[in-house]
Image (tube, rainbow, N blue to C red; front, side):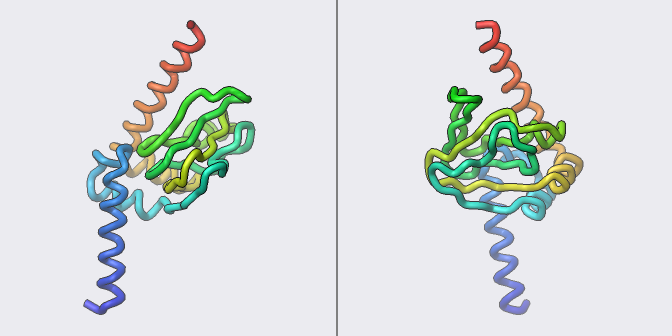
Amino acid sequence: MRASRWIRSIRAGSRLERLGRIPLFAACTGAELELIARNMTEHRMGPGEVLVQEGTVGREFLVIAEGTAVVMVGDESIARVGPGDFVGEIAMLDRGFRTATVVAETDMVVEICGTSEFAVLLAGAPTLTRKLLVGLAQRLRTADERITA
């Protein structure tokens, strides 16, 4: 094997290992992780950077690999998110506006994909799709509890 091809193979393997350590992706099969790796891009962000802005059109889905962020609706902090959590899926699913603003509290590493890549992941990675649905159900339950409290 040529050296450059071998180095790309090593890098691909370590990327799959990193993705597999993210809780959202941990139960994914090897084939699903490869699909995720092909359709998501690692991005680094610093404290104070906005991951998503409430009221804007959603064109990205983000999964937090490292770091923490605060979730704001209006001026109210409603949650903190960290490794394994995800944001942006609601606007991606219904093509609507962002429902919250998410701001980095620490240095962060996030995995990002756009609209068409998100559709590929939903269709090709059933383990991921199920975990997204469970996460959405948990968020809905939390929102219902806040409303009835």
